Image (cartoon, rainbow, N blue to C red; front, side):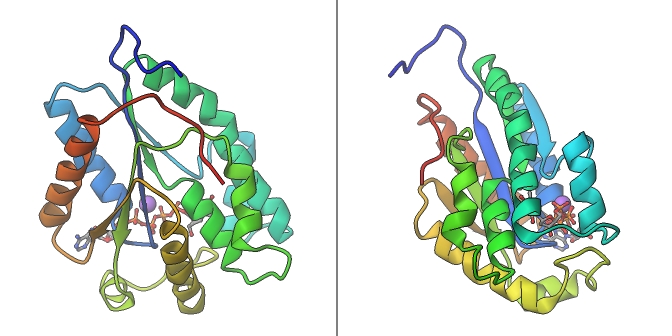
Length: 215
Ligand code: T5A
Ligand code: NA
């Protein structure tokens, strides 16, 4: 396995968490921090609603279209696969890519529907082989803290029963995955950001060759 190239490669940093944990806000702060430290950075988010597949996902999330649970699951995954190659190219060229939600949300939200033929194991399968993050920062927040950040919106999944199952599933998924750093997101923006910066800085110190996600 090759571990060195002439260009210092970028890192693949994933930010995960429950709805309103502060992922997008923190991704922005992390981008600024890394740029100030001289790193080339790109931010992407999943779902990427701008592609043809992303548009199908968007209308599903807004409730204007229905989809079979398995079918929409595979579309969320396809939405990552259609961008996977460009992530690899960016990283190889030295760009650090910050990803707002990834395979972990993909598996967990689908499995939380409690469809008898859609287990967490089934849901994880199409993710295998996607670029494996160097680090996944999981923004952990209690239901009580989430509630303080405003009521649920109109999108699918934004209800308490679903969020509780999502919380439990994230926990069981992360028991089995390496490179996951749990961050207490129920604090101020600055406190959360400082912990994320420390975790990412430590991650840069141990970057090796990028590999595929595993089962
Ligand atoms: N989904 C996603 C799947 O089912 N399968 C998949 O494969 C994928 C990728 C849309 C839905 O799709 C599902 C999961 C979702 O249900 P989305 O578009 O990422 O996913 O969801 P968003 O609605 O954009 O994002 P979230 O609601 O999850 O919010 P964030 O990004 O976690 O939080 P953020 O930063 O927007 O902040 C929310 C609010 O809290 C405040 C902010 O100012 C904002 O008002 N806030 C804080 N307040 C106090 N203290 C702090 N530390 C704060 N941090 C943020
Ligand atoms: Na967000």
